[in-house]
Image (cartoon, rainbow over all chains, first blue to last red; front, side, top):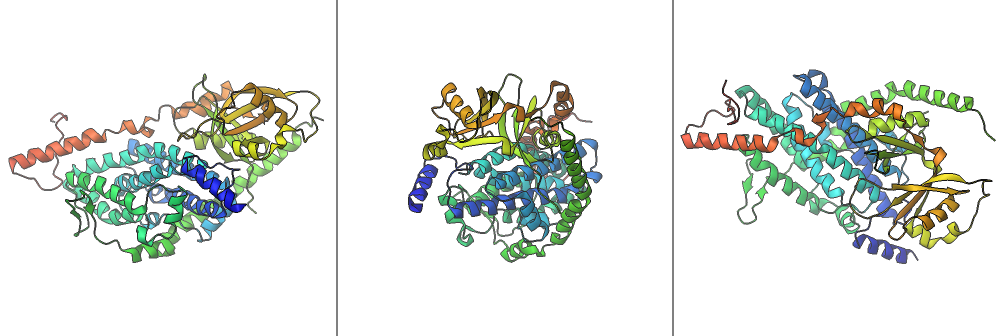
Amino acid sequence: MIDERLQAFEVRIARGEKIEPGDWMPDEYRRQLIRMISQHAHSEIVGMLPEGAWITRAPNLRQKLILLAKVQDEAGHGQYLYHAAETLGATRAEMIELLLAGKAKYSSVFNYPTLSWADMGIIGWLVDGAAILNQTMLARSSYGPYSRAMVRISAEEGFHKKQGQEMVIRYARGTARQHALVQDALNRWWWPSLMMFGPHDSESPNSPTLLRWRIKTRTNDQLRQEFVNELVPELQRLELSLPDSALRRDEASGNWLIGPIDWDEFKRVVSGHGPCNQERLAARQKAHDDGRWVREALEVYAARQDQARPRVN
Amino acid sequence: MDTQWPRYEVFEQEQPDQPHRNSGAVHAPDAELALQNARDVFVRRPEVSSLWVVPENQIYAWTAEALAADPSWQTETVVLARSASPYEVFQKQSQRQSETYVIHVGTVQARSPSEALREALAKFDAGSVLVWWVVLAGAIRRSTRGEAASLFEPARDKTYRQPNEYKVASQMRAANDAGKAEAGNEQPGPAGAPAPGPQEPAE
């Protein structure tokens, strides 16, 4: 019986159909999706913090409006994703509890500090650019609610990447001091951006299952290579250098080949021991605690309104 | 003591002559705040003219797979209301990649949710429908004409949320041309020296 259902499920996926809430799905499909979508949601929420720190220090009003709008978007994207995970039976309360307890993973890149205003440009271009590649791939995911959230998020994030690229171009072509600032930002964010795509395919135990059920449609290494091929020539055109002495173009394949990624650092940061993990979780916990009285007040108000409503029999 | 507020499904209408579409949900303690939260989460960009919110437990949903597997919707299992009420009907119509889940197709009169489904199957084209939702019309909190200005107008002038506000392709070309010009002169300046783009007027 189970095998017949599994077969029918896999046939639907092979036909390119979306699986929707209420449809039969294997437990492992549900488990993998909850894992991925909740991590993705947490990344959007924690992802507000590195940039949020610079809103009050924006150099002009336009830049401030752009940064505010971008951080607001990340909050909204976290909400889209928590709701997608809920359709699989996870509750938002549980997911947030795991995040605050330090038991949930989120993208390691948000555990690095933002040291200068130029980081806002590099994060927009590199970090959002890497995220968009991943999200465009996930928009083709077989699970309907995840796919729909990704279509919307990818469309909205187009401006995140472009505002960052615009800033990097301006600084790279600006004064010597501006160029040095953006070069320093690139030096610090290049490797963490490449780590965003996750472990090499050979070290990624979930990948075969995720690809078979079309939860993912491309591998970590494929996406990382596309990112490197797009970014390296553009950064070089702006006379920025990449912090990788082994970087070279392979004539046969046309690919830019990078040097070895420091996976020890990746493991350290993703397991809670990066430069800012504690600070990020403390900021989330504070926001959660500071907002408690608002949540309680709204709840009491709603209950009172409900009681005051005339009963119709 | 944090508990989770009820979930409300959100429907957006881009233009007054277009149908309402569902693409997500919010949590809120009541319908008024659900509408406010829906506005914050789904209306950061200038393309909404009306919002509906519906408590999740007021939505009766059937996938095509469920309709085929379990025919209980064909017979009544609840006590029918004495008179018919309007139900709004929504469909998921295609497998195309999209941010939309179900889309509003119209209204039926019925005395129970499953009667509303049967009415909908008779009234609307059901050929390629993948998911049906029916909702008692009275259970929907709809933004009013009077609320539209405060809910939807603030997003309209925030053009910096649009990707086409940023001319990065031409800026990259300008950087490239400047680089070539420097190479042609064989006088590469120090990295980062001011390099005005060709379109920019000299000061």
